[in-house]
Image 1 (spheres, rainbow, N blue to C red):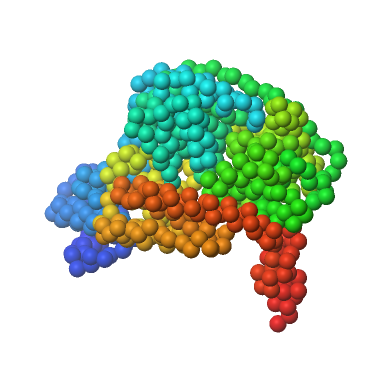
Image 2 (cartoon, rainbow, N blue to C red; image 1 turned 120 degrees about the horizontal axis):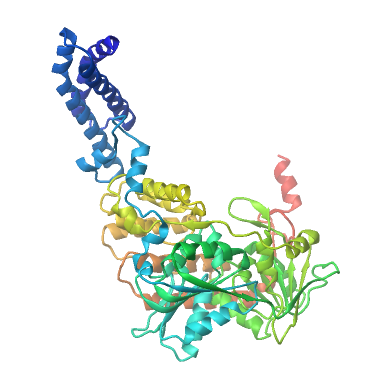
Length: 617
């Protein structure tokens, strides 16, 4: 104990000098402040213990005299740390917040103390984030079955006959189809997606993408479609929110059998009731015995599946040059263009459809046979084989009641793998992805938005076994981009970071940043313009820019000319379809160096001659 007293007395002068010097060091690093705070905290702890346990002598009396100054120095450093942190990350700490973040035992600011603070401010279970839904005893009808079993149709029948309700779709295109279904049935309906709204002031029915659910609006009936998407790390949290938070007495969930057990867990956690209705295919699904040869074996009614836009266009061009009329469907194709391509195939105006796995998400097409031209897809991180669930979802599009009573499946390669996937049952969905509600993030008084978001999700994942952390890498990157913009509130930063667009596309991110600057300075943002004689790629990029423009203004509550934006999107979509119709034969794969035509399945972007020429120098 005597050694502790000597250590304190020897260190006091130096520490006190460093604390006094903080007044002239406004930009001291957080690391140096934390180190100093920890050192003084240790001095304070040792001094208090020594004074309490040792008899009075000259050294103890000296320590008693120094104790008030040590305490004062400790508070000064803590406040300096908090002030510096608040300045760097704009989180507005106050004295109470500093106290809340102090771990009493170690007398230092710690991650553990921050976690405890956050844990005390969020509900123990995500279901309790939705008090209106908890005020009801909801009844769920789970419609489960594979693709093409009519489960969504049956759920929508209940919704259409209700006084009011909401259809929550996985895609904008399906939300649009739901809206048109309501209108054709003579119902007053509104369409709400992140990129488009058609609002009726007296609507009884709403069709929207699942992300746009308003958990504070009460409905008689709600339909949540493709709920197995709850296991998607990018978008799954929207289905978690819908199942836990939709404010409706009668809820219908359409999903694959693999997701039923997890969905039942969520319903039981909410103390709601449920029933399960199982659906079987009306059309048989057969894996063909004979090997498929491309393009020789292509037939009318085929859906040819590949996994990149470039390959879609290359295969479609190859078939167009053989005399086939071709529809195309891929992810970056605007919804209106995609709908036209579907209608052409539905009406028999095209012979085949070449598509990515976008075809597997509830799109109803008269497909006789699904042919996997490729069996690997790039998922944003790696090129991987298709999962059993993905194979079932895509292959199940083959067959159409009263048109093709048998659906067929074949492959260009890896036949054994696809056939094995069709035999096996899809893996059970075990995790529901989760994102905290904005109001809880904003209620936490300290820490950056990034820290609050990450801590909330970590606590959820650790506390309840079947919740998983959603992929928030884009949100974090956008919050980092907003950085030290002092004119923006925390809520504004959150809304800006959650605007839907692909951050990997640098022109889109550049637009987003320019819109942020305009928003800060309250300047009007001009509507983007485009030459409608542009290439297909340029037209698709322009459509995405219009999507971002629309979503930015809606998210931030800005006034803009929505009719002009809608008109421009329509024109762009029509122009894209015109390009696809008139130039399909020219969309062959070419060498990006010399322009030489390449085979549709050539694996590289430059031809062999250019490759050898490049590597000969």
